[in-house]
Image (tube, rainbow, N blue to C red; front, top):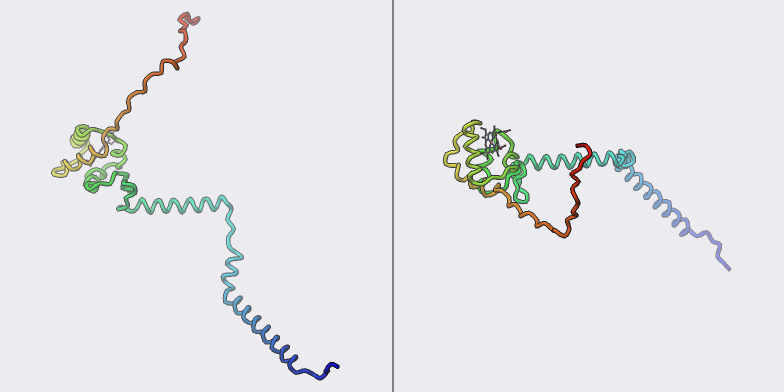
Length: 176
Ligand code: HEC
């Protein structure tokens, strides 16, 4: 026979369950209250289209490129990023003497022999107001002749006679 006496341990268990429930709810409520701002920010975050995202990253890349370009000392792969000139012990001499009137691009886009560079410097001194370079001149000319020498021109490829499609030139043109 089962004992139908009122069992107090059951109501204790019930009470503990309720207390646990209340504690859990209180913790959740506290977490929600303390994270409310973050949760709302997350739910209301701006939704960008792919196009807008591309724009934003492009702008970020441009800002990065600009920051790199603004860095006067940055040298990447042997190139002084700000001017595009080849990095070298005499780089600062060349920047000081050659970039006040025009962009360093005029240098990086030109090639000349040593005497070519000397003539160019003479020409700028005679006609463009380039001051005498004094004792800096040999180092500057060395730099230019070393890094901006004429590139070797490859020999013309031999003609492949067998591949030529010969045709007969028609000299009796009707328009004559
Ligand atoms: C006082 C100003 C001044 C300084 C400093 C100066 N240049 Fe020039 N340079 C000029 C002018 C002006 C021109 C002509 C620009 C043009 O054609 O647009 C020129 C043109 C050039 C050109 C292009 C020549 C061509 O055939 O088109 C090169 C290369 C050059 N300079 C290199 C140098 C170098 C290397 C130095 C440093 C030794 C230097 N410049 C310093 C004024 C200067």
